[in-house]
Amino acid sequence: MKSQISNLTDQIEQNVEQAGNISRFMKIVKKYTDIQALDAVILRELVEKIVIHERTRIDGRKHQQIDIYYNFVGLVDVESIDITKISA
Image (cartoon, rainbow, N blue to C red; front, top):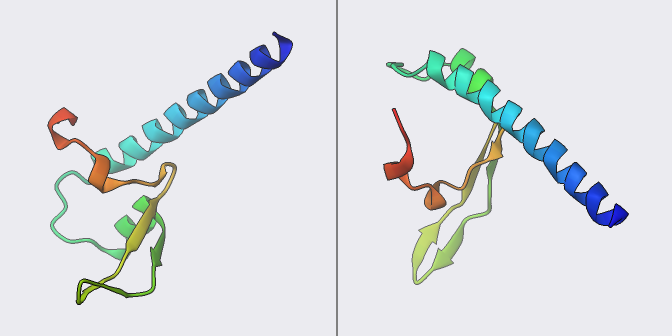
């Protein structure tokens, strides 16, 4: 039981920290809801790093994976985001 309590406490702390990080990221995003062009200042504020993977060929077509790690939230899997659940 003590081990389980410790694990659950750790999970709660991680969730609280993650919620805070998401909140900080959303404050930054809300500042830039109507940008006309992406500049260096906005990019630095939103993006932690960009990882460009080696190009591959699949079925004769070239593919290149690009991962964008955002500040406070890390890598976001855009393929798994349901945009119908995002509120304005």
